[in-house]
Length: 78
Image (cartoon, rainbow, N blue to C red; front, side, top):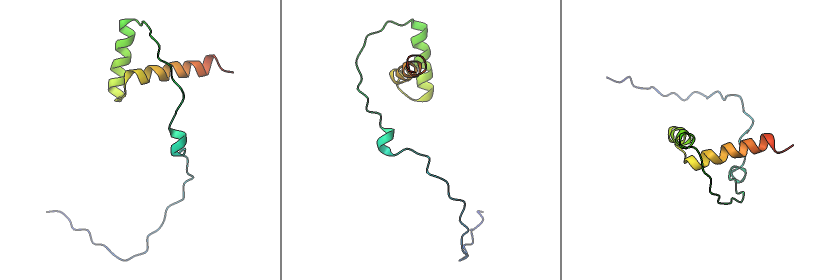
């Protein structure tokens, strides 16, 4: 038998207010222009991306783009 919850009319104690750290919805939507390219990859590399993308539940192309973008940000921009 489930234990019944007994509700009372006591005042609630509020917790500490946390600063809003999330970006606005407009900042979350990345709308950079993309360009279609054709690339030849080793089959083992592509399979690794597909496996990881499946585990994360994202398209493998999105994962590839993210890797290329991170590489570009770290090595080609100052």
